[in-house]
Image (cartoon, rainbow, N blue to C red):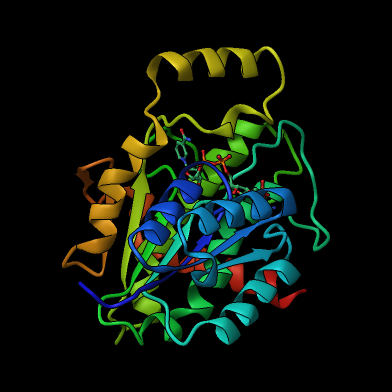
Length: 279
Ligand SMILES: NC(=O)c1ccc[n+]([C@@H]2O[C@H](COP(=O)([O-])OP(=O)(O)OC[C@H]3O[C@@H](n4cnc5c(N)ncnc54)[C@H](OP(=O)(O)O)[C@@H]3O)[C@@H](O)[C@H]2O)c1
């Protein structure tokens, strides 16, 4: 493939997203990286300069826990890029205590699920201008359990950070199953990917003592980012034949069972559209 490709990576300023972005820049592709922290954007620009890639790099500062931030990323991408070859979702920020966004959504629901819903659907047309477009959604398919709290998606009752993280993973499972049904003529391949344990700043927002324990476990057990991204790059460069597929590292996860139930996917789609319409 000699053509210069364009990638949008939400959460592209740190951890796995940053690792993927630098890989794409180093091989000559274009990158739009989204994050909230301008210092991280500046540091990434310095790395892009070192790679001779600053003219192919664009940092978008946006808070993707808010609808305004999600919409600004869509609008700016549409003005910055003529087409998108890959859209990587890699944002996360653990919240030990329940937090509400400016739109009245629970923070993790908004950041880890809703931003993927809004941006993915809105940029489908731009992706379809590519020969082989991919949406690569980093989440937790086939991982820890957890469920969608249909009657209380904003977790007003009995919030825990883990419950919120697990709920957003289940929502992303259904979003993936649902995506090709909403874009029946699309070329886009939708990939759900669970990287398992990777050494990133993921543990930083955890309260003590979980932070120290997670960091110690990461030191012992987690993969380095440069190693972890190799199978992701393979998957992005060689998307599966199926419209939607899920993987735990290199292992395919069958899209069966309640996590991938099409009826539940319909229900979540309607619930989500309703929540957005109210704002
Ligand atoms: N690391 C693991 O072991 C692991 C395991 C399973 C799944 N995953 C998934 O893999 C993905 C990447 O994880 P990671 O560990 O690489 O994450 P990370 O190192 O913690 O980086 C998170 C990224 O999200 C961005 N971000 C956070 N809040 C944001 C907001 N409100 N608006 C916009 N951007 C925001 C951060 O940018 P700023 O700091 O600039 O805001 C940063 O670029 C996530 O989807 C995660 O769920 C990771």
